[in-house]
Length: 301
Image (cartoon, rainbow, N blue to C red; front, side):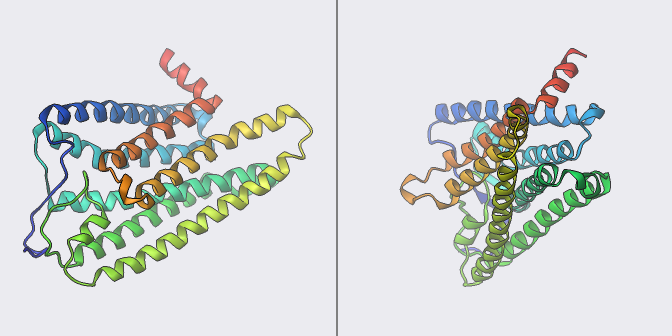
């Protein structure tokens, strides 16, 4: 039995029991991690270097890629390093940082909601686009609100989780530290505060989901009235990447936290989170014509 005040490290799950499988997992996640890092870094560099991509949509995509890089760089490298060195420990401060940055990913969902609003104004209220989103100040405020909400959410959840007395050992049944696993080590009913915070977060997330759905219902209503097939194709090419990323974000979240215990697999959970980041960058890179053209010119230069 141990108290949270005396804990200085946690024990994470190993990738596998045998050394060969540990090295195999390391190589697999290294490849996926480098692909995610390269894809998002390429998007960040392209948008930063090409002045034609300094639009509100590209600004939000720039912030989205920054969040993706931060999210995978928080958990995956530690897991790979533990697998490579055949260790399972993580420091108390390192575990706290992982929990904080894992919850901070909620800022990405807020940004996806902001992008839905951007599409709604551009398609349904084009004459007001310059007033509502044309200025850089409005975009910065919206992005700052998304980052700020994610930071506040992460700070509240992390502070609450690690303020609970821990007396069930220090073994975390996951490859990285997350709040449900930390609360399993609790020896009191203080975790009910976390349940309250979780309910508030779920309600806010559901509100963002409803806003996104309503925005696209109005967008599709306007699209169906466009007589030109080329005009409809242009609108769909702008909206489909965002819809795909939102669907991927929601589905991976549901899979990670709402799947039956019988199909629970920590390696699969980690792979899903990393693959989401990879697919996110691929979807926007392949479906955004201006971004593809700018990337080609950047490579040629």
